[in-house]
Length: 279
Image 1 (cartoon, rainbow, N blue to C red):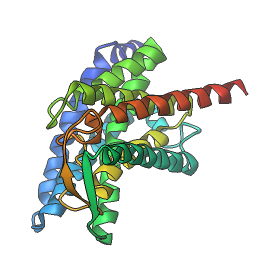
Image 2 (image 1 turned 30 degrees about the vertical axis):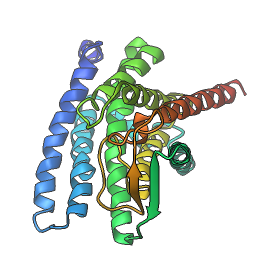
Image 3 (image 1 turned 45 degrees about the vertical axis):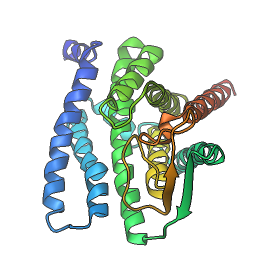
Image 4 (image 1 turned 180 degrees about the horizontal axis):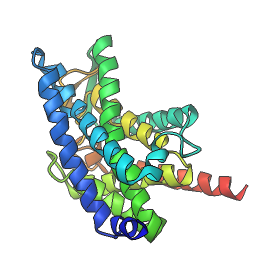
């Protein structure tokens, strides 16, 4: 049994298994999407179900795998980490929101984007919040929940952090408007979320940072989120141009501001975690 466990944690196995779980989960998600949206005709609703809701399949595939082969890692998803609590969830939400608003403000001041109020569709906003959380937490479950934890057991924190963040960035290669700046930013946000998990003992904080980051961009501000453009949001994007601060196709993540902000937040989270451990 111990030999089989060691084999499952051999360097190449967790990344390959993560990819397999992602593909199987996507297939499950799309089957559920087809079943659940048979009578839906509104394109805005179809967008959030297809772009975010299908990730429920990744939750299903990953939880089944962890329940069978990685029960100790499965505990970390729920109550196995001390930082998996409401406080850390709210801190993560606040961080994701603040990081995006700073990036958007810079883009607005540089006149890369112009926003106007579009309106509130409360049912849409609430459902979108749930679906965006499902999507974002599914990616965190795979990369920081399973991949990072599996590699950390055998290869330590640094290598596990680097590999899971590279994997996370690579999964975005097919997104519209991807660039070297965007890849670097996605890698850094991966490191940031890994610090939340390792330094603050909270997978839930990583869930929230990621979900709030995506929701603020796509559903609140109406901006592209890694190349995805929502048809309905609180704000309407009236004009957009590309610069070092914003990419009109990829969004805020295609600008240098988001990379800088992610670095700063990563450093702050690391220093706070270090201070906590020394106290």
